[in-house]
Length: 132
Image (cartoon, rainbow, N blue to C red; front, side, top):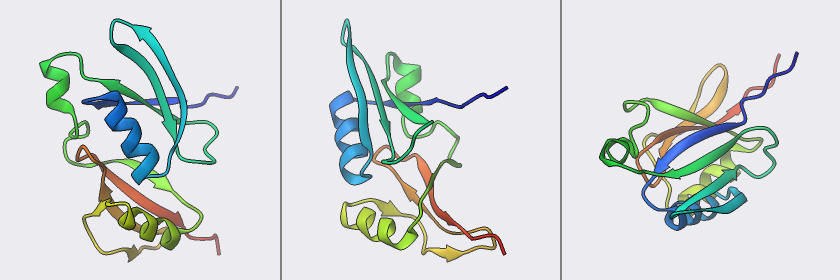
């Protein structure tokens, strides 16, 4: 049996602003932007080269959802962007205005640094170590 985690919802304030951020500053690909009527859209973005998991950008529909924008994981790192070239992506993201919350560090499992997206969600940018 095979199962795949295909979508993760990120609550945002505006579709177009979110698309511009994730495709511009983070370099993600826009996979789908379908009008569902009534002001709702089905918007999927993913890191370039990602084949199984994408983000569903969902505009907050009420005050409770608006309160969660940028704090969907209670201030913890909730998203992990794995790369094959940490330094390439780190420098590109910084040049695109992404705020890193720490200096990159070498851990036993990866080169890693925490950054925030436009909404305040915390992410790890990481390049796993090669197995010994």
